[in-house]
Structure formats: C-alpha cells, structure tokens
Length: 253
Length: 286
Image 1: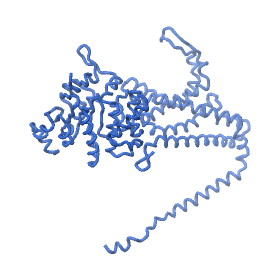
Image 2 (image 1 turned 120 degrees about the vertical axis):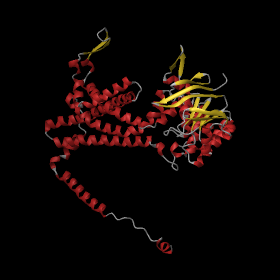
Image 3 (image 1 turned 60 degrees about the vertical axis):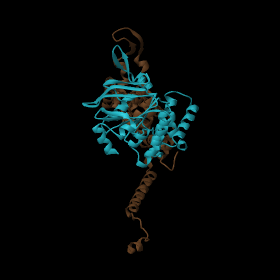
Image 4 (image 1 turned 90 degrees about the horizontal axis):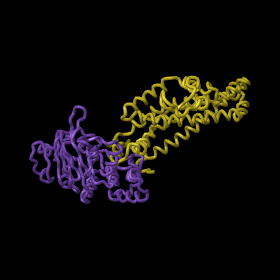
C-alpha cells in the first residue's frame, strides 16, 4: 500500500460519551495533514489513538503497513502487550501541547534519551546526532540547559528534536502552540514548516489556520466525533462547503 | 504632583522588631541555666560519660544499630518500591495483594512482628519448597534460618516496607501523567518508563520522608532488645544494670544517636541538592 497512515471506522468512548464516532483518514508519505475543529470535537483523541495512547473501541489504524496496537488472527483483533505497543511507537514521533520534556534531564539529555535507552545506540554517535538536531531547531547553545531554564517556545522546539531523534516515519503534533505565549508561537511553527519542507509526514492538530493554509496539503475538519469535511488546504479554508465548517472558520479567522 | 516629587527622596526606615531582642535575651538566660546545670550537677557524672563513650560493648552496640538500620531500610525501600508499583498496576490481584500487605504490616505492632519472626520456629519447624500437599524439593529447619539477627531484619524491614510503599506511591503519584505519556510515545517499554522517567522524578518527593524513616529506624532498632540483641541502647542498659549509672549511660547512647542523626541529616541535604539541581532557573544554570 502506498499510504503511510490508514484509519478506518475509528470509534472511542470515554464512559458514556462517544468521542470518536467512526473516523476515516488516509495520509500519504510526505503529506502534512491538519486536523481542525472546535474543542471537544475529538481531534486530540484521534491523534492519541494513532500511537495507541488510547485504546480503540472499534475500527483500525494502520501505520506503515502495521496494525497499531492489535494483532489480527482468526477474524479477531487481539490487543498487544504493552511492550509490543512500545516497540511499534518507535516509528511514530509525538509532540504534546504541554511539551512534557523530562525536567530532570538537560535539553541534550532529553534528545539523547530514547536513542540511548530505547535503541541502545552508542553514546558518542547519539550525542552528535542530538547536537545536530538541537542545531536544526536553533537551540544548540542551550544544550546544557534544563527545561525549567527554557522558555515555552524553546521547550517545544527541544520536544520536537526529542521526537525526531528516533527518526520517525510519522510525526504527530497535538496542539503544539496552544500553551505558548503569542510571541513564541512563530518560532515553533517555523521549525514545523522546515520539517514539512524536508518531506516529513505530519499530522497536526492545531488552531493555527494560517499554518494550515500555508503548510498543510490536506485539511480535515472535525466536529462532534466525525469528519465533517476534508480536502486540499487552500480550497477547504477558502471555500468551505459545510455549514459547520463555515461557522468555525468564521469564528477563528 | 509636585508635592509627591518633594517627598519621593525621603529615606525609608525598616520596621523595628523589639520582640526579637526580648526573645534573644530570654533564650540567652535559659541557655546559661542549662550550661550551669550540666556543669554544676555532679550526679550527671560527665567523667563517666567520657569514659564509656568509646567502651567496647557500646561500640559493638553502635555497630549493630548501624547494621540493623542499613539492612532494614534496604529491605524496606526495595520491597516498598515493589509494593508501590504493584499498588499502581493494572492487575487487580497485584493491587489487592499490595494493599493487604500494607494493611497487615501497618496494622500490627512492630514489637509483635519482631517476636513473631523470632518465634517462627515454634509454629513452623521447617521451611520447605514444594507442591502444597505434594512432594517437597527442598527443606531446612527454621531455627537454622532464623537467628535473632535475621528475625530483627525481617521484623524491622518488612514493617518498614509497608510505610515505604505508601511513601513511594505518593512520590510516583506526584509525577505528571504527561511524563509517562511522553516516555511511552518515544517507544519506551513499561519498565524503562519507570526506571528512566518516573522513579527519578518521584525520588525528589520520596527522599525527605525516607530520610525521616531512616532516622526513625535508627531508634526503632532498640526494640530488638526483646529478642535478645545487644544494640546501642541495650548495651548501655546492660552496663547500667550492673553499675546503676543510668543517666551517664543514657547520655552516652543519646550522644551516639545524635551523631548518627546528624550524619544522616547531612547526607539528606546533599542528596536533596543533587536531585534538585534541575530546578535552577534562567541566569544561574548548572
């Protein structure tokens, strides 16, 4: 198959509340897909399903030809053991709204952590790559700083470098700029634009319509646990067909 | 406006605190009284205190107290951490076992537990490994395994584990959920998530109460008296049982407890500073 991500009929409930009511999505290699929609529409939950931080109630998600979190046998899908899920996640990078850098480690140590301890690669090689990644996000001179010594924008850039250190095939961004002061949003979006330009496949949950219009190939508008409308970024944002999309865009633009 | 500018340059006088001076004066008088009591009371027999401070059986008792404290805390921390992780696991059986353990060992007097392990041989003459009601692979008499020393380690250590389990559980609970998710998203397996991300951060919350427990254990070890082990306090008691110099020997024991507590407090603050080094903010980076 040519698609990198294929989601079919993804459903998820928290208690009695059905957050995802059957989501389909296809992402091809090199594509940047933005998920837009009002808060509570299920965008973040869907993103968390992609690397199995949430279990599915129904449907399936394939990433790079592997069924995420489950093993098919005899017409059923069996949930994988936590360590097997962990191994699947190596190829999927994730960036969180609240950065979630490891506060007890320096920026450099944060970036080195997974290649060193998940992949067990030699220290010196990992260190060089980590420094290169920090340079790529413009923070080489902050390598020895702890997260508490960095601004929000700097922390999020380190978090992106940390995810890239595993050389993922797919990057997930869960509202990466929502927790930032307005003047720090730009530096994070710039790093993401570079990444998109370098051909990284990305799924981005965001409220930055400008970013979606400029960088995304494909935009998916979600509301109330369903995909309302999806299409090429410029087209969908300029002339949304669905009433709910129009109403949402009118509010945020 | 011009009026404000006129007194903008007037000097600022800090608040005067006469109460501090009064309190200092009272404390100085009390301290002088204490010193005069110690120096002018011959019944304290400071000469005996000095003489017994390094006495052989006191030294042996001191060593035993240190050994018991270290080993019991080791058992307590390792088993307590395991219990805390069990308590937080997805497996309901493990959760239940850990909760039952804490309930049992926190709920019975430590003196009873010490005596129970000491007298284990009476209810259970042999320990054996095998199929229940079936064949045995391996069997030893309990009296060989359970010496007073091992009974003391079991009694103090297993009891401590129940308290440490709660301390570690609180520490793990204080680590933000997002930390675990970030570690999982990087492909870390569950054991690695704990070892590299959760426990190092929980450690900061765990160290102060654990130091507290260690200092408390130092003095709790004197309970081994009931199973006939001569720890520091018991050694002092054995001596004053012969020469009736209770106060000087109790002072000797107290001096050693204070020395050990001081060392532990020092180690605690060093450890806390080390674990807190990532706290430094912009300006003074490590």
